Length: 306
Ligand code: GLU
Image (cartoon, rainbow, N blue to C red; front, side):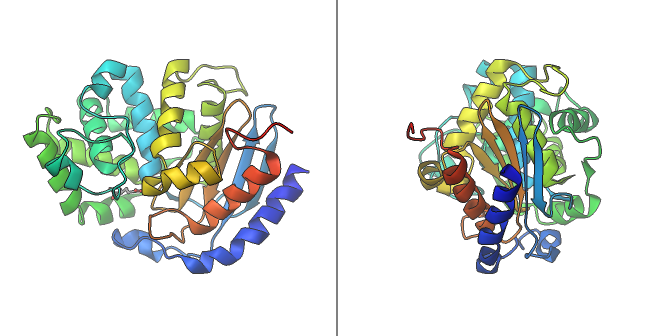
């Protein structure tokens, strides 16, 4: 039944790929075929369902902010992470620095670039990129995740805006470690190559409170999983998070590589790949897919009792 539903969800969302474009401000991302679309759903009971392009590798981009936040909470603790990074939706674009300069002394939340760069500045001095890669592979239940060197180089050669954010954060005392090391760490995390399956794996681990339900191994503290899911619900879909929460109601995080990671608490993880993006930077067809699945399977966090 779930497989049929996924097939139908894919078919009804597919026309929407024509309504968006791949991100092109990182030149390497602009080369991706925008008509690709895939959805993968893993349930806590062990069900695994896929439809479409679920094994195609693509750039994780901002979804890595979830992994960095989880690592920082585990390694540095809640108080350190949230001392100078807020928990509020920003309402601005993901790469904005306007609020940072005009009204706030710290980033609004860890899901926008300024917040993620700050979080990475707490991690970079204490954990190597290789350790982060191993952590990412474990959380996504995917041993093949690796760094996409071309995306990494492409992003590093277009880094001015994030470099401006990082130095502004240093100027405000939010970043106290090496800025260039932090930027390199941030871009490497954004350049990891994943599939819709890897995102479903990560969603599954978060849905089960930080445990891999296949093995019973605890990969994250329950508190870490709770904090991450809450921030995803309020801030995960850029400055579209509010309307997405109303219409879909599933804690999610998108990335400009076209991925969406979704967590239906205690039930399932969903991974989506659809590189045609809307103006806000979210996968157009991916959002449609999730809206359909949410309605059909009653996945909204506040779904009416039937
Ligand atoms: N690496 C991207 C950037 O910093 C991430 C953007 C995103 O996926 O939202 O611009």
